[in-house]
Amino acid sequence: MSKENFQENQADYRRKKPAGTADRRGSASPKSLDMIPVRRSNRDRNSNGNERPMHRRNAAAGAGNMRAQSRRQPQSNHTQQSRQEQEARRARQPQGAQQSRQAQATRRARQPQGAQEARRTGQPQGARQAGRSGRTRHSRRSLFHRMFPVAVILAALFVLFFIGRGILRMLPRKIGRDTEPPVIELTSDPDYAVYPGQEYEEEGYTATDDRDGDLTSQVRWSVEGSTIVYSVSDEAGNVATRTRQIPYAEVSANIAQDGHSAEELAKMRESFPDADETASGSGKVIYLTFDDGPGQYTERLLEILKRNDVHVTFFVTGAFPVYEDMIHKEYEAGHSIGVHTLTHDFDKIYASTDAFWKDNNEMQEVVVRQTGHATNLMRFAGGSSNSLGIWQSPGIMEDLVNQAQKKGFQYFDWNVSSGDGAAEGDSAMVISRITEQVQNYDTSVVLCHDTKEYTVNAMEYLIPWLLDNGYEIRPLSVDSFPAHHMEPD
Image (cartoon, rainbow, N blue to C red):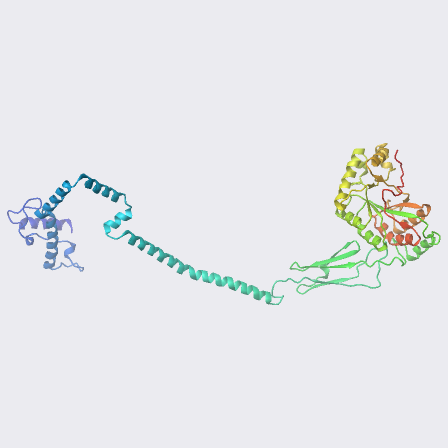
């Protein structure tokens, strides 16, 4: 209702008010409800904005005025009398009851808010909590209904993944993952043989793959002792390997070595002593010794020795650590092991006696690691009469040979040299020098080096010749002939 309408209604009310009546603040009240004007407001209009009928407006206004009048009317005498009686009864009650009533009010004030609210509303607290739990269960059920289809879909995808994986495994190889390695085929010539001193010439090979086709150009091969190892891989990383044994010629065949033809070697053999000139059982003993190894040719030498059933002595160093495990193979094959210094560095080991024994002891540790036992056999680098040690530290060799005896070592020199310590040489030279010199001694300690390929090749022929001519090949021991160049004091 606007301010103008309100003021207009107030004016109409004052004009129509009968004399002797008072307003709301007065003690008198209207004689009749019909005499009280009804203020016009938006409630007197219907939804179309038109005024409602008067009788409806008067009825609504009359009901409102009656409620207002009932609130303004003083309480009846009966109500006031009832309250007075209650207060009197409370006053007559003992003091303990009043305190009990006060304690009860205090307990109510301390009760949780839910209990107070239940008391106000008249609804038990358990019912309200049950309502809440019901709503919680409903929300949980709703969450379950929402998540259940997602879980079903994930489980179905998981099952389909494994089913598809199994199907792929059952499909042909060309559809699935490549797990098949290539195939290497080796070509061999039955008439081909490698003589000592000759290099192996490849006989031929091919490599194919079921997916990548011809891989022959990608084959890699390497020589490991008397074995050739071939390897190739395809694009998927599958590796194939094959091995071939080098077809060495029999020792009874003509030997072509280091540029010498078979005819030339035949003439050389004619100059060698015949078996009847060196009678069998003559008691001549040969100690074949090999220095400076193990190296890349040591494994092939072990095969030659095993084939001829002979045992020799290896004076080992640490010059080639990659072949250190060959010391164990030498020991297991029954050969003697001696120390020949770790570094074989003359400037280092002959700087002083302490430097020599430090180096020698380090090599002894290597021998123990590979064989499980220490050795009491040794050979000085360059021999006990080497000029390099004497020149660098005069008198050092005399000190060392004496100290070796005191430390429990037996050192060995040689009385037969193969000549392979020089920078150049060949198999024919080795065979010629050894066969010529051993005839001069009943006991020969032969110096060789298994780090020289042509020396190892020469053993293919030399060892059978020595055995055929009555020589006994033995490994060294502490009691063996030492062939000293310099005797200890």
